[in-house]
Amino acid sequence: MKNTTELLGNWKELKGKLKQKYAMLTDDDMLLVEGKHEELLGRLQAKLGKSKEEMHDIINSL
Image 1 (cartoon, rainbow, N blue to C red):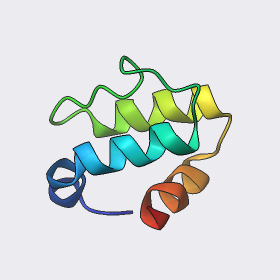
Image 2 (image 1 turned 90 degrees about the horizontal axis):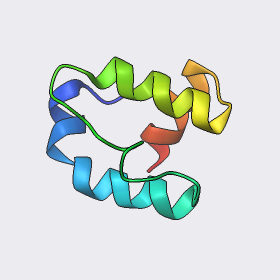
Image 3 (image 1 turned 180 degrees about the vertical axis):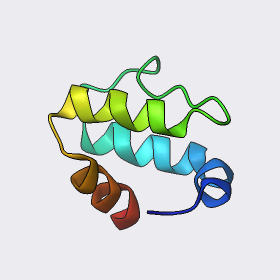
């Protein structure tokens, strides 16, 4: 998975791509607070029914 700095630096773009791909995601689901990226990934895993590895692959593919 992208490192935290890359994730934060590209977050607006990644957030838009994730919301396009998974329309059920809301702005609240996509809140990224610095230092809480694992919490965000857990929230996305639960909402999308994906494993941690699948979420890493999804984010890396964007």
